[in-house]
Structure formats: structure tokens, C-alpha cells
Length: 86
Image (tube, rainbow, N blue to C red; front, side):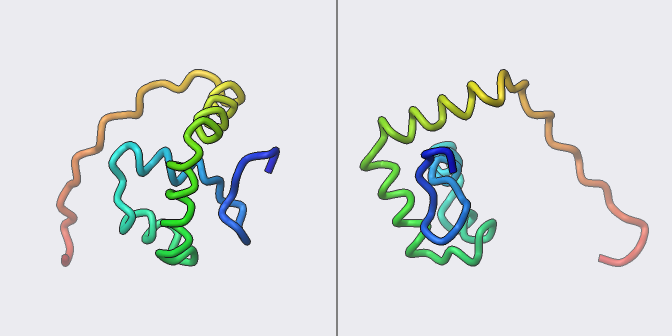
């Protein structure tokens, strides 16, 4: 994928897992998002990222350059109670 490190056997960039983890997303949440990866591959990807910070930071910078400026995410919506069950 354009020279970006990926999780072996997938198209998932290591930078994506690292970026979310660095922002406080837990390994458990990453596993819920990518259940087919399994704990070993998620942890391997994160270990690779932390061992190669310069490479991953450069990959994140390339992505930012391609995507352009990103505005702040919208505020979370308030959950409303539905009029039926649950």
C-alpha cells in the first residue's frame, strides 16, 4: 500500500492502529473494530509502530499531506430515548 507498513495478510495500515492507540483507544476497542486481526496481530502492529516511530510518523505525515486539512470532528450527538422497547 504505497510503501506503508500494513498488518500482514490485510490491507490495514499500521499507522491507523497506532494513531488510534496513541489517542487513547484501547487494544480491546481495536479488537472490536478489527475482530479478524486477533490480539497477537494488533499487539505486533503496535509493537512495530512503537519500535519504528520515525517510519510511522512519516507515514502519518504522508497521509495528512494526501488528505489535506481536517476540520475538528463534530460534537457527539445526544442519544434520545426511543418510544418503543429497550
